[in-house]
Picture 1 (cartoon, rainbow, N blue to C red):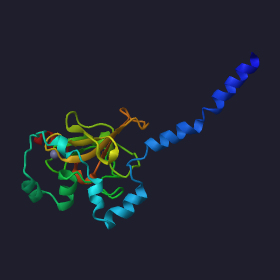
Picture 2: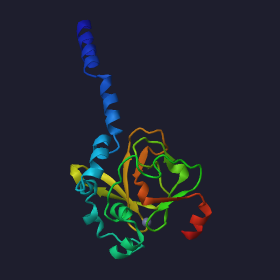
Picture 3: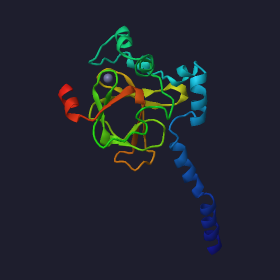
Picture 4: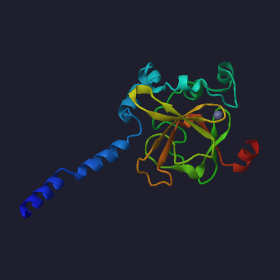
Length: 204
Ligand SMILES: [Zn+2]
């Protein structure tokens, strides 16, 4: 009897490698399905890769309507080509290149680069090390989520609730020590920053 207990104990011990949980955790921390080096090397050099980075949530979203109903031509007139590619065509900027990636202001508001709607407070931003600005929460109602099934996986796309501009994706349960354990992974180019919270409130 005792021997049986011992074998069972040993079996449990040997089939529960602690390394598995460590590996699983590090996998979920990968910020983007493409490795950082691949993205850095390939994105500027191969133009077609920009279409690989874009997402296919468009069809689902075509039925959505947003308060800011500007046409494609109107957006082109006010946005830079890169802002248009990311905000209106759901592109992704190369990691570690954005203006706000490593900026951690103590106060202020990040607004939509398209329509100026306030999206995130400075206090929502945290250091994720993923190469894009990361926020654990947004201003209530400012960000709308869609399921994005591009590239054979299911991700949650986030857009500006006022103009539908593409911001990035949100990831949950990665183990970051934040109040929500969510990471809003946002393109810097989709954002503007102002320290003047009051000015943003009066505009909103
Ligand atoms: Zn917007």
